[in-house]
Image (cartoon, rainbow, N blue to C red; front, side, top):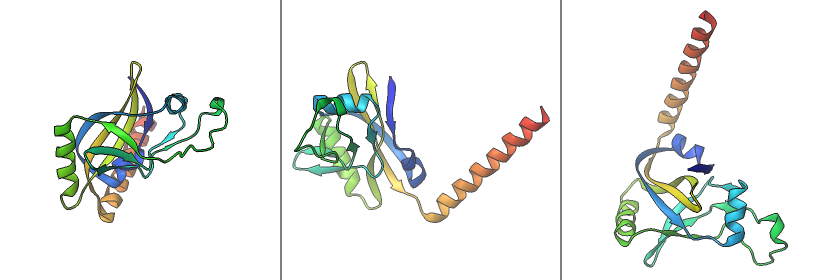
Length: 149
C-alpha cells in the first residue's frame, strides 16, 4: 500500500469521526498522473448526485506524456465506487448538521487506486489554536529531552 497523496489540512480543520475506503473511477492518463504524484486533495470534498457519490474539487494535473488534451478538466467530479448501502449511509451523515465527508488520502492497493474518506465535523477556531499549542509543547519536550541525552 503506497500513499500517493494526503490531505494534511483535513486533520487540522476537522475532527475525524469515522473512515471508509472507496474506489475511484479514473481515466488512464489520470492514473499515471496520480502515480507520478500530481494530485492535490486540498479543498476536496464528497458530494451526492442521484444515486452516486462523487469526489469534487480534487485536482489531478494532466499527464505530460499524454500530449495535449484540449477538453481535459483537472478538477472534474470523479465517481466514487461504493456499495449502495455505503452511499445511503454517507448521504444520511452528510445531511446531518455540522457533518461533512472529506477525502483523507489516496493510495494504491496493488494496481488499484483507492481513496480513504472520512465523516468529519469541523473544528472551531479555539480548537485549532489549542491543537497548535499542544504541538508546540510536544516539540519543546522533545527538544529538551534530546539536549539532555
